Image (cartoon, rainbow, N blue to C red; front, side, top):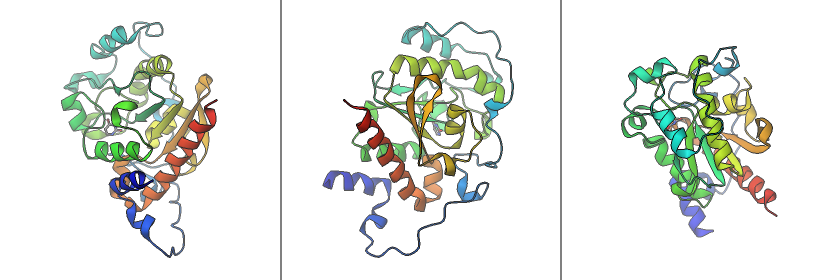
Length: 251
Ligand code: URA
């Protein structure tokens, strides 16, 4: 318990943990309000997820039967969308390939593009603290993104980019067979769940990933939480929901 409190402190939420008297509960941000957006490039919550637009995927090698080696090689050589032209590295994903927890973010940022690893910047540090709060070292989870290449100026992923990248992530999910998917941020949650529901409404409920039945819990993006630390208490609730869901799935 003491250790968990330390991890919560690392998430920056000890203030509300220690507070004796709570005044009115903070308002859930209205859909489309600045407080309900997240990630590096906030945009209107009312926008549909890019992948909901009908877009044709270009010809690609069939990744459905690939093992890890072939899949990683295929991603590293991918030129299916325009993002390949501006990348330094593809960002395939890191962590335990047998993980119970799969964390899915939006897309690489500048640091991730330079290092070829997801969530290595400031948002990554907060994500690590969030994982510690649920008792996990970063290496125990698997961490990936909706996109494997960095969009210019951290803009939102476009429909055709998501369509091109989707089979890679789908294959990673099939290989890992996680017990829980934590979708961090609007882009991840909406694209995984194929919905345009705002993140503020997606969180708090257990969803499922496509036909697999793998539970998906949505929470705020750590980059958003860095800008809006008061919402860390909601993120902690989301993590508790994910832990409870995982616990309930154990025999
Ligand atoms: N934000 C994301 O969504 N993913 C990363 O890898 C880094 C920042």
